[in-house]
Length: 69
Picture 1 (tube, helix red, strand yellow):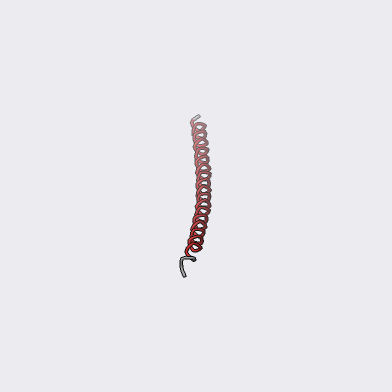
Picture 2 (cartoon, rainbow, N blue to C red; picture 1 turned 60 degrees about the horizontal axis):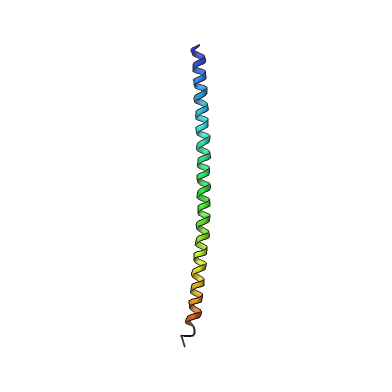
């Protein structure tokens, strides 16, 4: 009788460990996906900021040309 209880307990413990391992793997994948997504968003924002700065510099250069003679 006690052997059956031990086997059932070990089986439940093994299932719990497998569940924890799978859950940790899936959670880690989600975190890395979020990091990749935030990295892509940051790169897009950086490109837009650089483009805006270039546009402002070009417009400033166009405005400054008539003043310099």
